[in-house]
Image 1 (tube, rainbow, N blue to C red):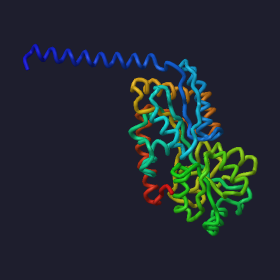
Image 2 (image 1 turned 45 degrees about the vertical axis):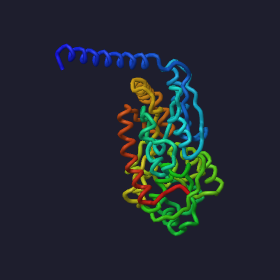
Image 3 (image 1 turned 60 degrees about the vertical axis):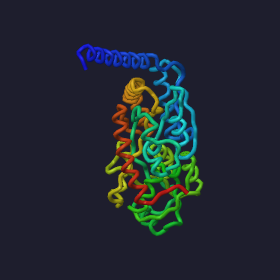
Image 4 (image 1 turned 180 degrees about the vertical axis):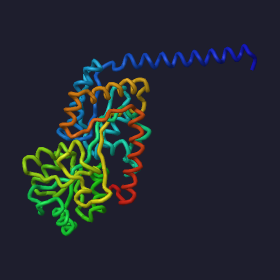
Length: 327
């Protein structure tokens, strides 16, 4: 290649790079062009729904466009995740839980989206343990006594989760092995329905987000047996860890995050990530999310992707070891 041709090739590559950069900056500056939809895979009043509605107003203010929360319930949140993954309007986001962004395909190869390929990570919002919760009338005056009674009851007890493959479901299946209990699984659409079922005596235990259990625990209608954290969690400081009552080597976290279709331009994803992180880390929002039971994190897209990859392995190991599959 002669010097003249080399010079033309280099100039052409530089021009292409400059054009791509210019287009990227234009997309970043002009987005959003109209209202943004924030999709939630669980019912109104559920933990993801409450977080989405807390985020919507400040995000709308930051974007200068309305943010509309839409609930698309079913399949443990995977219907909503699939809707987000397949959206092509450039203005659809998802408020998702970790199960939807990690092990959906491991649990069921027929899930119509691939979490690792079809979703663009935006920002981690918060994390929390789950709290093992039972009706106030459950036997045993202490958590340890309840656990002893639960071991004796075997499959006469039933537990609820927001669906097969959710972290609450996987966590309880792991807990059955670690704690030596054998309750039968009963799936429900979301945590509000689970609480109603426990209060009505249809199920006897569940792993719940701390804030979902707190009001009923304070009201004396439910009891918190233990949290799935290694030690006391800031968002459930009054609840002993399950290890404190004799369940060894048990640790599990839930988290929620904002995601977009993989087709979202990287510049837009980066802009949005910075906005969401700033919003959730602001003192007022941090306090509001803490009241909802979340220890605020906030992250870059890369930080969220790293968490997705690590949880995909950890939760995938539970699925394989416990031989969990869809019926």
